[in-house]
Image (cartoon, rainbow, N blue to C red; front, side):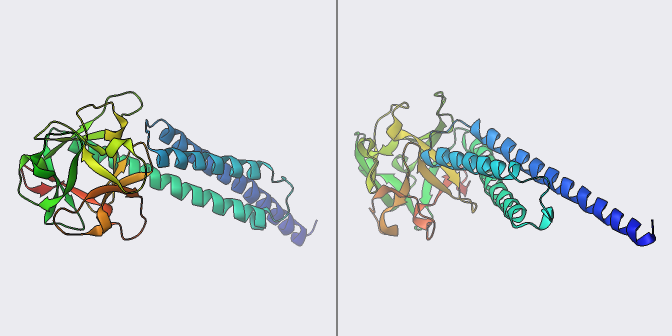
Length: 271
């Protein structure tokens, strides 16, 4: 056997090992993605969007797994085949999405640990920093409107964040008004865009009172409705006094009127 034949055999052997390693790498990468998906599935959340997102992750995983298992071992130019390149890109895309959601959940957990310490907060809209969420006229009545009002540190602008201990609702919070001990919620449990936020009642188990906080990343939060695909919103992004607070569709651009900061009333510092 001449030297050239030996070299060719070594190259073929090296290519074969590389192909096996590539298949193993893709399989392991997919398994790691599945582990994170399973961890996310252990989170008790009633948020519709979160559930749908996990369903999409699982569906994408199953599709990719089926594709990978269907690739014949004798595929020529395994590493360079269009099918393998496509699968690798799909795994990378799914991994990025899953990791992004995992980071968001970890950030949320850290935030909740700090917020749930019985502090009293003012809720400041990012689009109108001189304003606060306010229960109009310090009303004690159920159904009282909620709007923007100039910061005055009165009790009808102060809220306690309480995490629920109801099974299946552990990620949910209620926002309790300091002056009335009642909660902010969706008027009459409506789920249509434009539903007003009102002072509802003092019953934790009522789903219209349930919210979930989603960190935006700049110290502010989206206040999502836990049981429908809406979030708290300053109507039309207005900065005027007495602008209504409503529930609106979740925006992806120009979202400052859906972002809120929690200001610790004791220290006057943002969370």
